[in-house]
Length: 492
Image 1 (cartoon, rainbow, N blue to C red):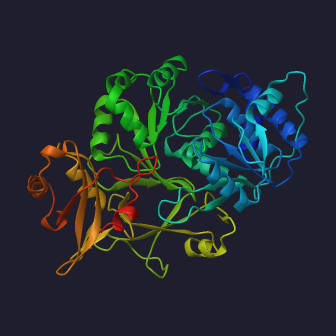
Image 2: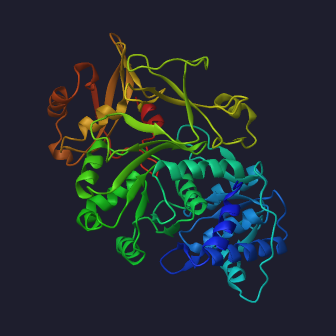
Image 3: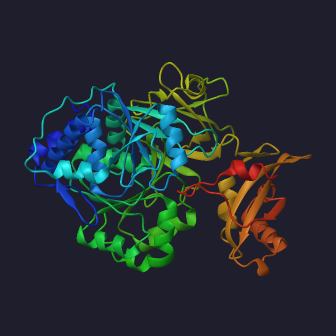
């Protein structure tokens, strides 16, 4: 039984040595080459004095050499703490101080003399040296921490999430199951490689022995389509915000790959019903998926929205290692219904070990059995699928009717007057709560709140129609498109 992603790579290097493991715009390596280069990289890190269990920060870039450093650190026995490419140096130092790290691997030198900089190019040079030994190293034990992933902190303090080798195997199995992934897939990952979605898609590909290609988002749209053509890619991974750019500027070009692509997976944020319909129209023969999950537990629920076209609020089925529970405020298991939705909780080997140095916060979301309790409210439908209303603090209780803010937002976005919007609850003397809509007009000179409200009266039940509208320059969002509702609630 495979006990780590590194063990899976070693097996594929022996069984399919010449098969493409991963590539980017400039480089590509086979499984045997990748395994050899990982071992040389591990030797390089050992020579640098990196010890067992040491936390090492690694600044991201969408390149093969980043992956060599990532897995080389794991093979050397270190814990990888991936950082965003564009992260500010002050934030890097803040994270390093918190995790007691002294080394950072990156393309560019950091200004601070408080840390040891390891140049990524030096790691790649050592890994590429055909005259150097590629020694064997012990593989991580199942309970060894291999990753320390930081959340974005959009709903509170950013937290470090401890992930073990065993967690990563369970996550990889969930990834494979979620999209019926096979070893023959060639998947382009457009998401930043420091983000949990990209890390887990990489683990899934390496676990099953498929091929991975890393693109720098779609910032350079020509590069993206060049990779799609030259690698004959069969699968794509996006966050909705990146997909939105493709649909806005190059939808016809994407449609031309209908016969080549097997599936597209989106994660980290929900995709709008409008864009789901648009993708179905552009790519009628492609399997289309939207993933529900979290950094704490990876991919836990998946919706094949090319198969289900009429299920609003549906997020799909649970993945192979996931047990879903619905609980009340005392964490007692309950039956959740559309009339009485409940909080979702998850059990399974994919769950994190704990939050790093945060026992109090860990206890708030995790019990002694390893169950992770979310703030998301939903229910299981009569069709066996899972439906999500939103976060506990975001679901709006209007006179006893539970209103999902996303339902209001999607109805509003069908009006051409709007470029963007976000819905939050506000106090109401009669119904307890009511809905408020922040709007970004497509053309401020032409926006009319009364016309928008009239339109929404035809699209929504009366209680769901916003009572208040506020024009705003921009809806605060994370890089992957999630609305930062906390900032909007502070304005009410």
